[in-house]
Amino acid sequence: MAAQSLLTESAVGWSIFAFVLLAILAFCWVYIRKFQSRQESEVISTITAICALAIALITSALLPVDIFLVSFMKYSNGTYKDWAANNETRAQIEDTVLYGYYTLYSIILFCVFLWIPFVYFYYEERDDDNVNKCLQVKNALKYTIGFAIVCVVLLLIGAFVPLQPPPGQNSTQWEKVQYLFEELGSSHGLPALSFSISSLTLIGMLAVITYTAYGMSVLPLNLIKGTRSVVYERLENTEDIEDVEHQIEKLKAKCKDGRPLSSRDRHSLQELEGKLQVLQRRGRHLEIAERNCCTKVGSALRPLKILMGIFFILVALLFVIALFISNLDKALHSAGISSGFIIFGTNLTNPLNELLLALQPVFPLDYILITVITMYFVLTSMAGIRNMGIWFFWIRLYKIRPKRTRPQALLFLCMILLLIVLHTSFMIYSLAPQYVMYGSQKYLVQSPKPTAVPASGNASTGTTKICDADAPEDECTVTRTYLFLHKFWFFSTIYYFGNWVFIGVFLVGLVVSCCRGKKSVIEGEVDADDSDMSDDEVKFCYQSNKPTGVESVGRKARLSFRVGSLTRQ
Image (cartoon, rainbow, N blue to C red; front, side):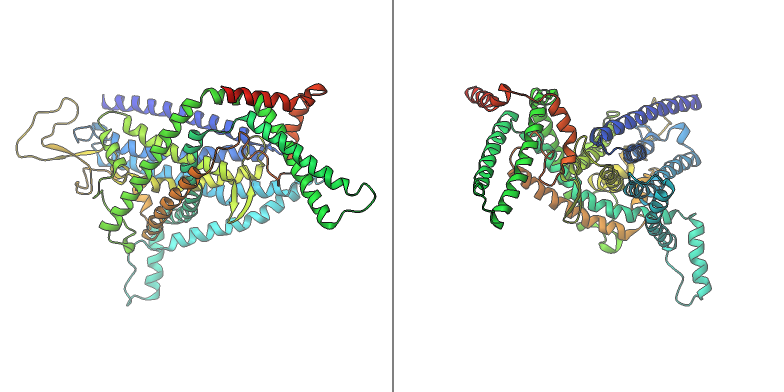
């Protein structure tokens, strides 16, 4: 009977997994196609971006699965289920989760160090006049070798970093070398992979501090403030165009009698002509935005956006408060830097941790919440990258814009998300340490007086307690996520200080976002450094509906009339 129940539960689990996988792939395809440039798209870069984004989302979903599995082994009264009563069965399930982590993390290593760099350089080496694909592949491989060397170095360092105390000073050189090889052989090289992943997680921490912290502050406030009215923007843009055209005419009037313009006037004329081109492109974008049905639907959904923005800002503040309390708890009750600020359980009341524990009796609210938290980090990271673009220190490399994003930018976006996902697990552990360690597990505290046999589960006596650091070792199973995060203490120390920086960047981003006004309805679509080629798609749409004759003359009058109508309303 127990075996049949386990098979049924497994079948349901695999069905849910297949559905989630299809949903993730569909979302990745829609997201990449939304931002992908129609002029510079290529099959290999598109497939790589979709697969990399899917891997990032699947890896982020592994933490809720890990917590669910360790919690699913027990009944609510603290006893193990029949199929999990055997230590070997539990060990097999735990090892399956652990190998799942290592498999996905190995794929991330392959993508970050080999596949994505190769596709990036392959596209960079593309030349319209060059039909020699072999030469293109050769050049891409040449540049990718550098990334492969870095990966091999990290693996070797991780393989020979001893996790146990080394032999004494009186040991011979051979004993020390033998000890290193025994360390490598006893763990089957898994610490090598752990060290490489932890090294990438440090880069992911920088990406979280830069993009996720900013996304958590800017996304809710943008939803609350909304965008400027497209009618007002078109009127202002039309007035600016007329003003710039008038200044250009004044400068050109100086050379009507044949006299050349001074160098200062020529420089001013070039600046005005460049500004006029930008304003004209803004006008085309604004006209298309006004006719776009998405803009009208967005205006109709304005109350819903405000509610979502309020909800997101409350969630962000809850996260920051929980992260602050967790870091303060580590500062007060851990052994310090030498231990990686590791603590077992919680000593201060953490609101998010308490909320997850309070939702445990109502299945599956706690699992839904931890899944929402994980997805929230990923989505806010995507929003941060979308608003900021791809930067290398103070240099902007690429912009992320709908239907106009270059393939290289999409590859960078997916690589950054892969690195962010690696650090997400530690961030969530910092938010709810006790829940991430043990999930919803409970254990029995034996009492001298026997109690009634429960209706569901094994016979037991005593009271139940939520699993914590004081629980017996055989009564509570620690998640594989927790064990993986604390394999190297020095990485945990860096993560700890990174959390403080994250809190500071979030608060600064929140203040800056509050001080900024409403965004333009075409925010980020038109910039002065854009090339005319990047605007070809909009030109095509504009020319197909371009007004002529009397319509062109009366455009400003109609805009003024509509603004006046809005003002009277």
